[in-house]
Length: 413
Ligand code: IMP
Image 1 (cartoon, rainbow, N blue to C red):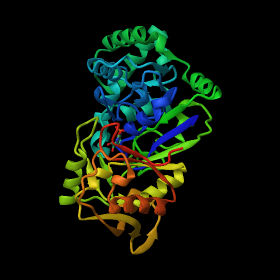
Image 2: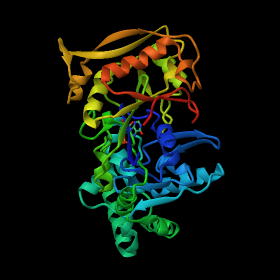
Image 3: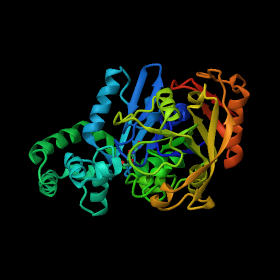
Image 4: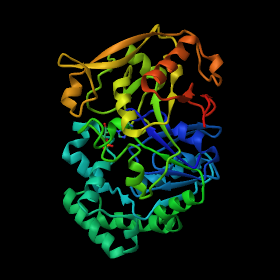
């Protein structure tokens, strides 16, 4: 399995961290290519629960190098904090390579995000991600490689403070960045070349997407999206490598969640939503915000499949649906009286979408921790089959709980 992509098929938080960690057991390299510390990837293994934001999930395996591609908005302070947390869990220090071309998220970016009102308007994670990518596109960003030029860094920080109209003392930030440069000197380098070399040598490489397809800057629910390319196309965008992917794994929950603003046609505001939130622990891994919850949406998932060309699906958190009398799945939308509408480009249209539901039987059995398909009641198997039939993609992994072992593997290649 030389090159594998793991991509969120919904609005993020699909449990990609767990899937990536599983697929990286034998991988040589795990590559993040988009997003930044807005992501929260959770891995629960023998050492406890690791909440990762910038460290690639596969890098928790000792033989798997974690590579942070240039498409990642890299917040040095967050990275250091995260590494400190891993150390506190007595985990070995991950083997990291940070792209010298990655743009730095600075404290001024967070400040600008607040001042611009985007944090409230879009419901962002307040991590300065949008302003960092803005500076990148405006060709005034600061990249890791630039840390070599101390004067340039200081001038840049003074300009940032002026643009933000305040914030921390540029000189202090400068000192911290130089300390970061010293600490990570031997881990900053040419990630593009390293990934290409690993692939050329036939090594197993897993590309770990952050957020999900519906949060993609262009193909998601614009403008209520993040600022990076969250789909499979982000791999070239965020690493500079042309990859022949052997597998594109779409990760989807057995229901839908969303954090932040924006339309969500299958959202359940009442008891069902509460039940999914509590059962699934649906609180943001980065911000702690309660996630909005609702039924599975196959219209949105068909869009995600068309965009990414999934070769297989990982259906996570199936255990959370146990105990529900019936399970609804949206199979179509009606928009302004028009049936069979495709996933629309405009949020104004998505806000008017009325889901057409197929109602499937639920099950009462607790399936938490199941590792064999035989342990699933027929209604649970029926839901898996229904998803496969509707999307035309095989489900090769089924998540049955947060732990790394709580997973059913079905004929994975
Ligand atoms: P930003 O990425 O912080 O700019 O936030 C933009 C939108 O993407 C907001 O709705 C966030 O809640 C959402 N978002 C960003 N990262 C994640 C994630 O990892 N999971 C789920 N939603 C996210």
